Image (cartoon, rainbow, N blue to C red; front, side, top):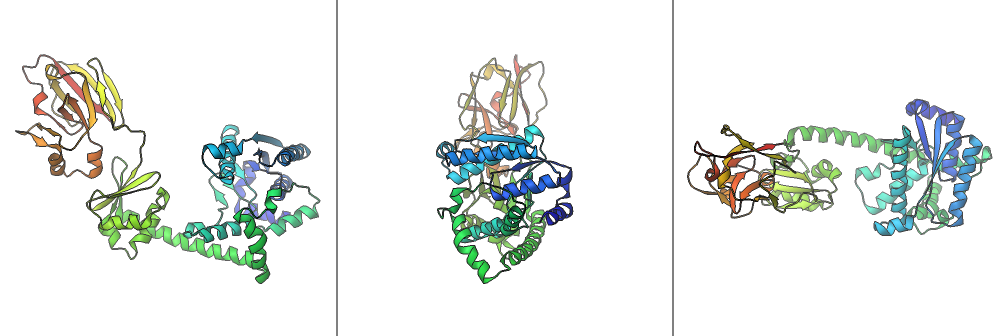
Length: 438
């Protein structure tokens, strides 16, 4: 196995030969064999062990074993102890998910602080098959059938092409010792049920199960590449990014596709949507309809679907601005308030007003239905909703419109149009220049 492992590294993961590597080691068979193989190849490795405090003395025994192994191999080792059950309760996670989150967050922190280039885990071919079957049993798309990636950013899994049998044979042949996790014998978890009851039967039916599975995954990878190439072409034709980073999808062009729902899934799968029928129904919905995910929302606006990131931090409440305020930072830019000696030419981001006409504190707020103002360059008043329609503003632009007000009167539709009533004139004694800097 050592020769096969070396060949695999040299042919497929050669970047590991010149990298500083952190091995995630539990003390179990797989991670111990990975450590010995990397040590035999004289790779630049350190060890990282998590004590999750879930198995009492057994967890402490794992930690002691890893410390001794590091000493025997003269390797740098890092140990971290976690109160996993408390963390799981606090963040309402399963114990398995809590341990995973704690583990990878700590690995990332170690890698960044101590300049490790990659983190190695000991996942192997049987783990990959188990993951495939778990995803298949729960229902999944093509990505879920791809199993475990060999390289995923800084995470590398160099044993992924080797079976559990290969690893165990190497360990016994070389008289290695390792720790047995008692929880692996329990069928409490789905992965263990598959490992103990399902996969052995499949291997009995077909002794070449793992080889055939690897071949199938290669075919799936080829199919995935075709899909990705197609999606790139569709993105160029049907997807646009506005200046404010709002993503627009052309409904007309999406409807021309053979399967709009499938294409929408591929275009939007990274934005955490789950109700794909609702997403597809937006194509024929009225403007203003929207679908939410945990991180984004998809909004129907005339001829487009608008993808917007949720921003829970942005306040919808009004902001009071005192007379002595010179600068105000907002989510849409910074407002500057300065006295001026002369009237500046009208600009979208700058207005000059008669300070004597203002009543402090000024109010900064989002627009509301029923708002009206007296637009500069026009006679009479106009409802904001009518102004927005005439300006052909999108729903997103309307949502993000802020008003600067003197009591209930609008002074400025910020960044768009000022109100005639507050304009500075030649007779103005105190000119206030208000500027938006984005």
